[in-house]
Length: 131
Image (cartoon, rainbow, N blue to C red; front, side, top):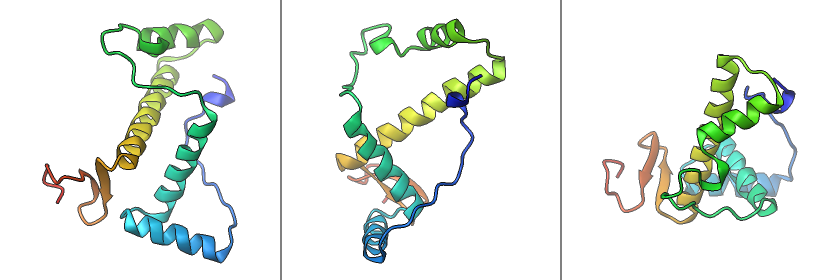
């Protein structure tokens, strides 16, 4: 399996001016997020500006945008040999990435928020037990 498929988590450090860190912390607090979660979310959101626009696929399409599991597995295996564990890790990372993108989009649309008090995500309208 190539290095590009490494899904282990690593620390990233950067230095920013004190005023910027303070602004980020304030915004993270407003969103009831940790500063790490806020920075990770903002970086991912910012990167979307460099990616092609991907709208929600039509659910009637059996292979929307070529993203179904069968297509992904065949594409991976056409380039290299993967063990069961490597394949599982690779496709699981895709689920994690898609969940992350979905949560970002729902937060940006003000449909959900992260509630530190409740220890997780909740709908903004309070439809669940999150409020």
